[in-house]
Length: 147
Image 1 (cartoon, one colour):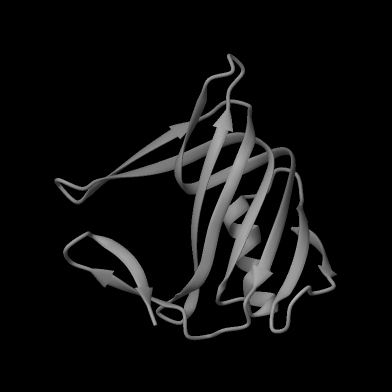
Image 2 (tube, rainbow, N blue to C red; image 1 turned 180 degrees about the horizontal axis):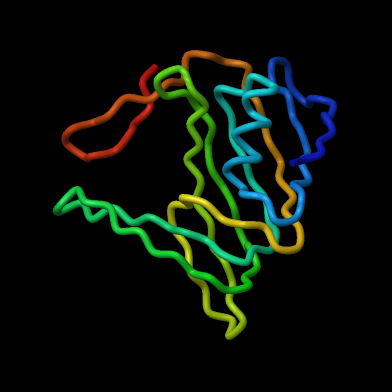
């Protein structure tokens, strides 16, 4: 599902990894499996790659309703960024992606999932903390940090 290599840390208490995800896998499934294996519960992720489909989610703050949209086409991930935490004792990924289309326009937003078609290379930083959890906030309708 993925290959990885640890990177020598530049600072105390931070573990860094470079991941290369296998072709045709789900980005969120592979990243979740990696975080579970390495027990990454507080960190950040960034990367790029190529995908054949992606489902994005948009929260309408007025209604607190989510709107999901899937794009089934070959796209380049021009930016993948996000954070890693815990919710209900499980790995919780909050990932945003901007993806370039064939006509050079872009789509993006909160990533529900994407299927790799080509390559996906990620950098993961693990801050080695277990206190960064999530709680549902009634006012915003979001799962916010709970320290």
